[in-house]
Amino acid sequence: MTGWTTCQVRPAVGLKGRTVARGRGRLVNGVNKGIGKVEIALRWDPSPAGQPATDLDLVAAPYPASDPYGDPSYVVHFDSRSPDGTIILNRDSTDGKGFGFDEVMTLELNRLDARYARVVVGVVVQQHQEPRTFAGVTHPGLRIREGYTVLAEDDFGGVAGATAAVVAEFTRNDTGVWEFRPGVRGFQGDPSSFTRTMGAVRRS
Image (tube, rainbow, N blue to C red; front, top):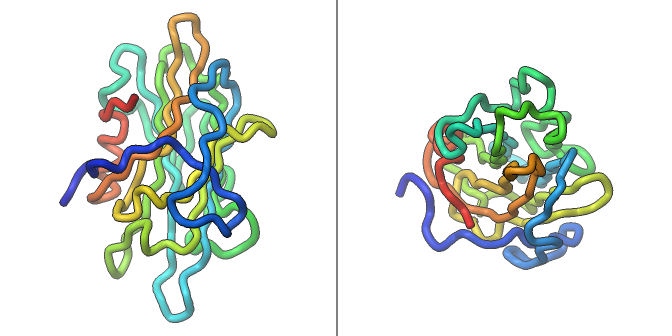
């Protein structure tokens, strides 16, 4: 099946180190208001010896206030950044090797131009020699925080059969305040299709 998966939407959940069972954890805070600068961090273990490298990518896209669920104004990923430097991929990995988090993205929502009213963040499992879903990724983990405050964490256990997932949505309300709406929704299909459509799905 290609496209958005069904029955795989859930609140973001916690991840204590790498010992939590897949699909278990906690949502730190529900809807958070007054969000300014956010860090999205992603980690996973390298593939076992003799297997193709595992590569996950963070992607983010802002949407204009005139059409917040339409086409993204631009997409930030491993080889691009936002024109004004407000969305930056600070760290990139193609194999999950190293200590700590393998990919880190910073969103400076408080600096984002007023014409943008929504930002959607996703994670893509890169496809190489054979199809791969989150089930084939060893110990994946996601952390979203503002400063030292952890907003949400997830282990992708609820979207194990997906090739990509929306992991966060930030919306600007009528007073100009940014709100964070956590949740993980799985997607099955080509990663390029995911980046084109990830903002079109309205999530509660």
